Image (cartoon, rainbow, N blue to C red; front, side):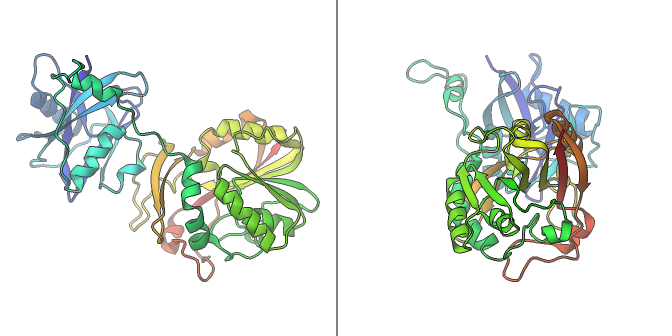
Length: 413
């Protein structure tokens, strides 16, 4: 039978306290959760919750109100849990976070923030509803059975969990809006490494004239067209068919003939021969590639000896610092997987899953794939601005505090 847990819903100004369990601390190690604890055989759910609040946060609580039951499976070991959620008054006095306890981070999050952290969907969805003031579906009584005699709690496990975001399908869904609102024809013939910095600013490329250049995650084709106009023979790949369709039309509009495109993922370059490219580049696409090591190995395979792999990705700090002043740390630097939603003015929306490796992880992955890192830059962009007409959100004040992008130039050994 699944193990019983008690979970505390602490609320403040429409936000809930969410904590990150230490990776080696089950249940749900490495996940963001409501503060929760096992219920011992000789105690009530409320007693377990009070003990946990005192041990982990240094507060005494009382007056808990049961509001929901959720069924959670731990992805690390497939252990199943039944968690009773109690709305728990904070009481008097400050919280004192126990760094030696079950958690290594905690933060207050609103309903719109919960997609930013890796939380079991079975816990996230009712929590979002609660914070929005919506009616929560009646809790399942796990002691009862259905008409076939199957325990209701067991039946809950049989229901298919919502799948993780499919990045390719998500790009298909928003491609038109993205190209219209965020890119279009704004950047002309410039090769853009970020929304505001071009190759003319950063000088990361070698001479690409008459070189075969592969673009990983080419999107709408702007990078390939810019490279072609610089004299390269450009090949762009992207897992989104809608993005590739736009790229072909974009190249036709610009009269570019030495650029071609294919629908495929960076993790699978099997259509290309070994050592068939002089350069591999990528501009803010590799964060959407979850099997990063495999993509780097493929890039190494298709590069000629001494060929360069040059790419820009989101700076790992950028992913965990708030968008708005005073630019506070909102997540753990060590959490590398983030699910989030993107919405556009035309109503298009999609969910994405991104990976944000640390600097150390990037170096380890590049070295392990057979590359030698030559250059790393963190472009300072607080004095640059997007072109007129761009709808890209760019905050110069934030750019003065931290970089948005980190770039790596490496070479095949």
